Amino acid sequence: MSYSNIWDGFDHYATTGERWDLVSGTIQYSTSYARFAAAAHCVGQGVRLTAGITYKIKNYSSNVAGPMASFAVYFEGISGSGVQGFFAFTDNSNYQLGLAFNSAGALLVYRGNPQGGGTLLGQTSPGLVTAGVWYFIDITATIATGTGGACSVYLNTPKGGSAVLTISGANTSNTGNAYANQVLIGSTANSGNALRFDDFHAHDAAGSAPNAIVGEGSRIYTKLPNGAGALTNWTPNGASANWQCVDETPPDDNTTYVSSTTTVEDNYGVGAAGFTGTVNGLVRRSRISKNDAGTHTFQAGVRSGGVDQLGAAVTVPSSFAYFDVFSATDPNTSAAWGASGADAASLSIYEAS
Image (cartoon, rainbow, N blue to C red; front, side, top):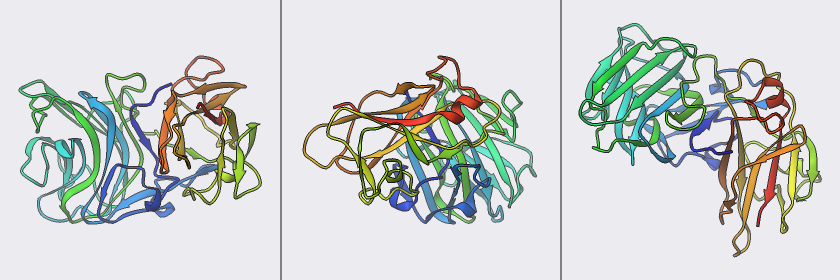
């Protein structure tokens, strides 16, 4: 059970609990910016990046030669001269490949910053995108110098469909390094139009599944605990039941929480959302800190059919931080998640030391 990539529905946090590693400008989270209304027993919101120099950067866990991303984006406007960048694969905040749109409604791919001296590598025909519409974009890349680089862009395309733009035999490394180690949404230049994002995925072509585009129709569902699970071994603080200490959005950190001083497990139930179709995987997200000077570790994961699947032990930080664990298979069946199994999975946390 590993998780080296980035999935984010922007659903259960706000600027006070920002999960991305670097932000600039005015970032807003709201149900008003969600692509879809929340499903049953789920929470749902999106993120809005206002016009100007406004962006969010999230680090991959390592250098990635074959980065790919899939996300929903909504352009509040496409007017103005020139181009406006809205997504990039970056290397230590330096653009490798940037994705942009222009006022004619074309999508464009640049080596480097589309709004700061980048080199145009390719563009679609005009009239492909317009303002006021949600689009789902998949972008795949090979970051390489010389003629080894490539990039494909898919627009509202189901998995297995054709790209609207394909670039091959190109130099796709602006920094000279054959990798990206971050993803960026928004623009580091002065953009003239606000943007909204939802259902964001970024992963690695060389990693374990998922290692291909997820395709139009993909959606991130975010659940919070809504009842006691199979185990209630941690101590509730600020609320009477364990699950009530960890069910708020955004997190209230030291106001309501569960705590433990021994190696025991807690488990929380979640309600059924009515999942159907293919499940790309589950992400178990935790927010945790310690309150003493000792060294502690924890494991987070999911439980299915009475069987736990826990991630590797992680050191607990002194200040609250988010940790994600990715699950590609159902521990009860050892096969890929089915919709009903994923919908029924509960949430576990274990103090490892």
